[in-house]
Amino acid sequence: MFIRHLKSVLILPVNVVLVIPAGLLYLFDYPMLLSEDIILLLGGFVFILLGAIWAILTYRTYLQNAEGTAAPWDPSTKLIVKGPYKFVRNPMILGVCLVLFGQSTLFQSSALLLYCVLFFVGNTFYFKYSEEPGLRKRFGSDYEVYQKNVPRWLPRIPKNLTRIG
Image 1 (tube, helix red, strand yellow):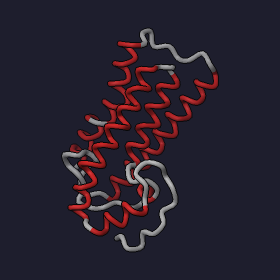
Image 2: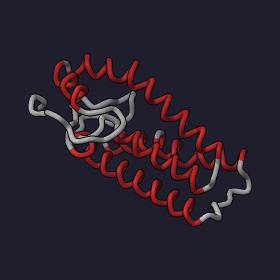
Image 3: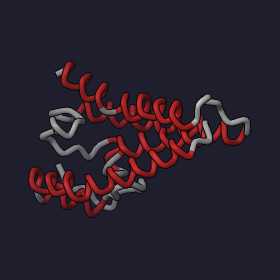
Image 4: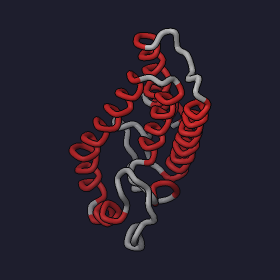
């Protein structure tokens, strides 16, 4: 199981938040200079830190509760509604988007900002038209209750998750 999780982490998050942004910075913003504006520097670091902490907490919750990996090709067979999943349906992607936005701010990079927006929009379509129908099929009414009470992107206190479990 460790190898399965390691592969999913190396293939997805490492590429999405490190390899691709580094490539974009090299191609479009070389030399890769940090912003000289202290507000943008601090803001970028804060977004990166918040996103990384949120993603790590989410992945930890996932590891402790899932039966499968976070990768779409090896999904969990168990619906997770604990930890960050109580507040938002896609907490890992939210964390990644915060990191990407922080990177774009830190480097004042329009290429990274565009990548962040495209990543968010692409995932929104993927979740709406692929992942969520699959989750409804796998978990039935439990997922429908979860979906009605927990937003896709913007965290909030859940209304009622007592029927899930």
